[in-house]
Image (cartoon, rainbow, N blue to C red; front, top):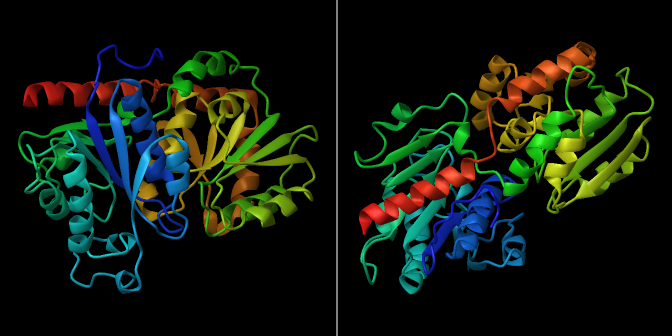
Length: 384
């Protein structure tokens, strides 16, 4: 068992995840659910995923990790947005919440899970109540993973891992008995990030120099921000011996274009796809250019200084909080070249990199997965 997981057992527990990936949604929701599923599985739980077959879905990747996927088809009559929905991200569902709840309920009837984990901006308390009704045995406990605090939830446990988030932000949105896990101390990171943390922090100090640059702008990057960053870097005064690594997802639509572009860069530039050693690569990098999404907590855990891009409205609060803490500096997407030139000039020095690394490392210790699984086990014990 890895050092970051608790010693108790969840043997014979069944956990069902409702989450999606797509070209619009990205891959982050599925990836953090996979991290939790891996930890639960190691402790004896049986994990299932319920996912809709959006363009850019990751059902095959989930199955490759050893989990069963119950696929919800994307039918022609499901493609229109739900005009009656009150949720800002309702179009992400690919169906009305009622359709989705009915389909998910059919799956849950056969699984009779102990827990349902929901990580989806297009679902709220209406869906959560509907899927738990009239199941063959006692209704499962519900864990909601959220980032927005913009809609009610019928949760027993709620996780919002974002910096600056407080439990009171959900006070009017969850039942009184719901426990809220708030802040990056609960960040869902794979155990290897905690294992690499000591070595990563040890090599960062006052003598840190920019020799390795890591670029990672999400698993999908549907607008090819990666290509824009590579173009902008050509205007920057960087060490000739610099090595650049670009990380992309298998569903990234601009992948081949970026690979071709990398060959024309003034510095040695490699493009790697669908990697399983991100912690090592982050630990070996001196600076990252990354999005203000869930990967922020991976970078913080390893003390990796970051020039950050806010690529979606739901990342704006994360980006602001990270910049205020000194853990990153924010790039201006609308003026990317000028922003990169100026920020790289300001942060290329050893003291600047060391300061940003120290502040980032103080935010996340890599043991959030332990705390979340322990909270689930405690909730299950209290319920029984």
